[in-house]
Image 1 (cartoon, one colour):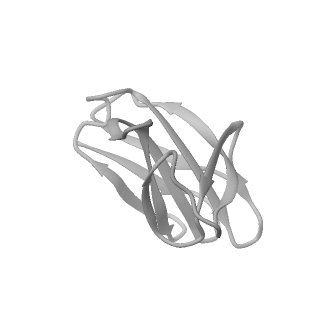
Image 2: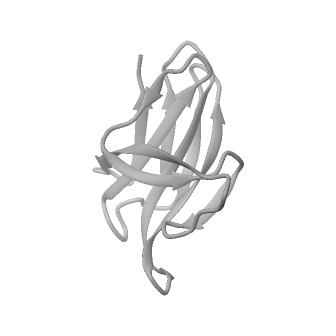
Amino acid sequence: MALRFKNNYEREVWAMVEQYRPGCSASSNWLKEGWWKIPPGQSVVVYGGDPRAVNPIWYCYAYAGDGTEWRDKYQETVPHSVFEWCSNVSDSSSRTILMSEFTVTAANFTYNFNP
């Protein structure tokens, strides 16, 4: 059981994920983490276990060095370096991104970053 991200794009992709995590902090029930470096045609496990167990709704964002982004309308603040933070955390080097929402439908689920 796992949630995987797969890079179907021609260039390396950097990705982050956000999941429902009750009690992550006193004022947040969501955990955000990243950055996974995913070479073209490869996949990485971003969550081990059944990703539907707590909440089937997840969020993600990814970008490639050529400026391509996989995003939608859900705003989040993230740092440039590797992180694992509750959603209400940021620092002076953080930037705002727009995440995509997706629903996990199986215990083994792959989210694809397509061209």
